[in-house]
Length: 261
Ligand SMILES: Nc1ncnc2c1ncn2[C@@H]1O[C@H](COP(=O)(O)OP(=O)(O)O)[C@@H](O)[C@H]1O
Ligand SMILES: [Mg+2]
Image (tube, rainbow, N blue to C red; front, side):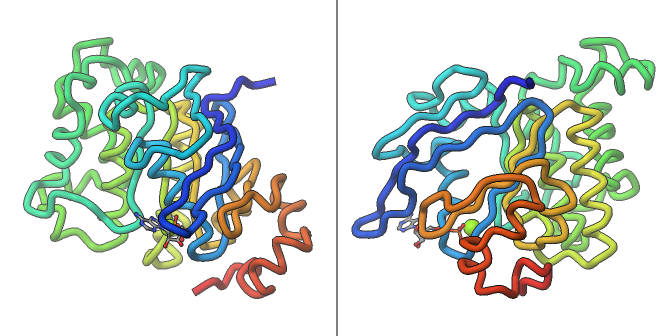
């Protein structure tokens, strides 16, 4: 059995009277793509904010490869291997696509992202410049031709892909994606699915995916956790989740068919 990269135990937080999360436990194993789904306001983004140290939980713990993250600051968690994208794009609009990636690298570009790819391209460990590393990520995310454009000049779908490339610059062990397909057209969404698979298969990175597009979730995710009103109401494979009475009720029927607005 694969070991867990990320393991969350009994995570609980409230904002004033709102119990945003109540006793949430889940795990993501090595090289898994795991879905975190649920209706608006269910608490999905709050999970990411807890994982990245934006909020502190009232109760519970978070383990990355069995090490607790609870007392670590956001930048420390990033160095330890937790990277995220945001529901609303946060790029440096006036920096080029390539520079958006380079600023996220720190000194990490000295180490191989995925030795297989890098050796295949003739790079040796520690010899790549930040620019070369940025190029690798830009190519992977289909942005190779637009490296020198300012982020704000890119079409919306490409900005979302650039955000993912930037998150990968920190060489994470786990990538947290918050609604990456939001606002993408069907072609971009299909490309995104392939890219997320590449991130897992070629870079060996685990992915925790928040996504409303059920086609994306059901196609990609080996395992899915469903949140509703801050609690996990169901867990399992896509087949199991699609037929779970509580999940169908939480979504009032329609959204699980893939046409969530
Ligand atoms: N910083 C905050 N202050 C107050 N309430 C918050 C805060 N962040 C999230 N919430 C509340 O927590 C609940 C879950 O929100 P969120 O995690 O954004 O849901 P989702 O991402 O599933 O749509 C909502 O009721 C939201 O209003
Ligand atoms: Mg959200």
